[in-house]
Image (cartoon, rainbow, N blue to C red; front, side, top):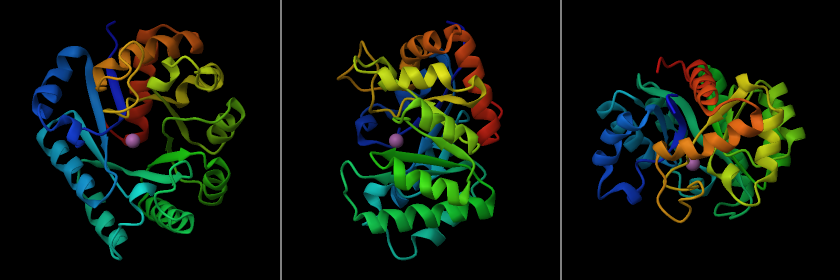
Length: 256
Ligand code: NI
């Protein structure tokens, strides 16, 4: 595979990479990876994302407060996120959204923090990276209301919902889940979404594709997800990697 992998969603700040972070990141270029957007989940991990972006040319950062972390966010979190967004290598607000599977933060607070960050993104004309787990109804109500630009990452909805996201101007992020045994929906989404709206991602260290499930994920393993997503989309893996690279460059304003 000659395609260049642009991983639109990763967490190399995770402690899963504490032992060998530099080794892994330094090795990615040799494995066909041309770009990574590292997503923060709270203020400290957003700061770490910026530090990784400063250290590696091919790494860019997204800064924001994840729904899991909404409860622990300080009162001035929004002003502090805004400061980080001014960094030249910060390309998006994320990851932000709603998670009604774990409900680690009260839903009212998740909604407030999600909406505040979307309003900030629109003010700054920056894309958002959206996490929507078992919260399609509220997520899409807010997206319809504010119409931010961005991506719904690790898209878990139906093809119909993906069509609505596309109509709203959003991109669809697909990754390791497409390789799982029960992956009906991601493959239907891959087959139906216009190619110019697809992004590919790892969400590493999580969501490791088959046949490496259970091990730590990294951006080079996108090659395995790309094979099944490309097949569903009716293109070659190389074509998929090239198109998703261009799409990520368009959305994030990068040149990778
Ligand atoms: Ni993530």
